[in-house]
Length: 263
Image 1 (cartoon, rainbow, N blue to C red):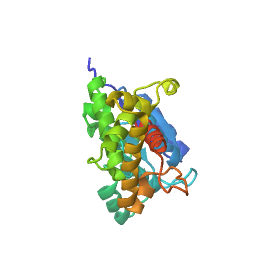
Image 2 (spheres, rainbow, N blue to C red):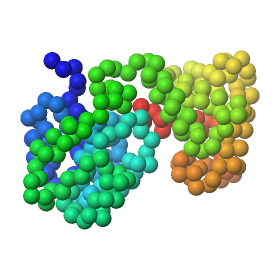
Image 3 (cartoon, rainbow, N blue to C red):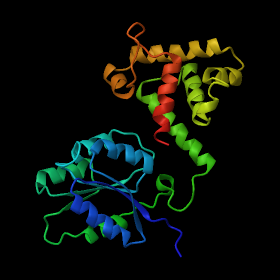
């Protein structure tokens, strides 16, 4: 017997008949499983982060839902994920130009519901055939080891800090990384026992005030040197009008919450 898990699928679709038929067909197979379904492009992005599906079936037009498949695909492309789901567009749209645009920038597979030989079996068979056997992305066969998890967390933290231009040359960057990493490994209930700044201070045998100044210096330099467009795009928390930059703890907690959603 194979130890490969059934391929997890998420459906973004507003036509209830299509949802019912896909769900009914998926239930008959043991190589695929439906982990979530929604008619909202906004909820779909949350469900992707929560369930980490291997494949996402997307309807481009959500006439009876919220948002659109186009919006979802654009948001997904601009979201940092630690896995790469197979994107399958399942639509009534027949436009060749739209097909080409979606295929080049967003989707792995495209099916038109109006084509003569269309069937739900065709869609699911193509998804299974295209399955991406990447254990780091999907944990298909083995669970993620503590070492692999730490590598993934390290990549996520560094990616976020790189986006807003926190320089590796500054010691404050190291302190920020250490504080976020510490929080991601703790029970939120214990944060008040040892604050992130105190944890970093104890680790480096320094005063927490010195750690805070080092972090603030790194933040101030990033906000001075980085493009405003990048800062507004990647750091979405409110910033005090008086200071114009986030405080050390504001930045640490923002990225703790943002990265936690991706784990």
